[in-house]
Amino acid sequence: MNLQKESSMPDFPSVATLIPHRDPAIVVDKILSFENGAIRCERTVGSDEHYGPGLSSEGIVEFCAQSALCKEALASSGGPKTGVIAGIDDFAFFKNATAGDVLVVETATRTKFGKLSVFECTVFRGALHAEKIAHGHIKAALT
Image (cartoon, rainbow, N blue to C red; front, top):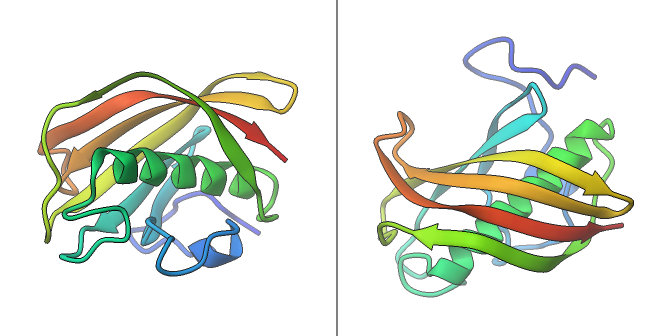
C-alpha cells in the first residue's frame, strides 16, 4: 500500500479505520498528506462541535492527538492505533476556531521512548497556512 502523497488527491484510508474513535468524537475529517514522517490532516469546524462551540482549545488538542494516531497507524502500514494523552507541553493558542473554519494540523514525531511518543503539532486556519491557531507538544502512550 503506497501511503505517500503523489498527487493532489492522495488515496488514504478512512480516518475511522485508523483510530478507535467514532462519530461524533472523530475530529479529523481527512488526511491531506503523509510524507517524510509527518502528517497533515484537515477539519472543517461545525457550528455544533462535540468539543464545544467552534472547537474549543480541548478540541484543538484532541484534533492534534487524533492526527498523531493517524500518523502512527499509517507508519505501521495502516494498522489501527490506540493510545492515551500522557501530557501536553508548551501548548499555545493564538486564535479561536469558529464555525466554518478549515483547520489543518501538521504533526511530526519528535522523540520516542518505548511506547511513549512526543508529537509536535501546529494548527493553521486555511489550507494555505494563512493563520496559525495553535502550537505545542503532545506526549502519548501508544498501544
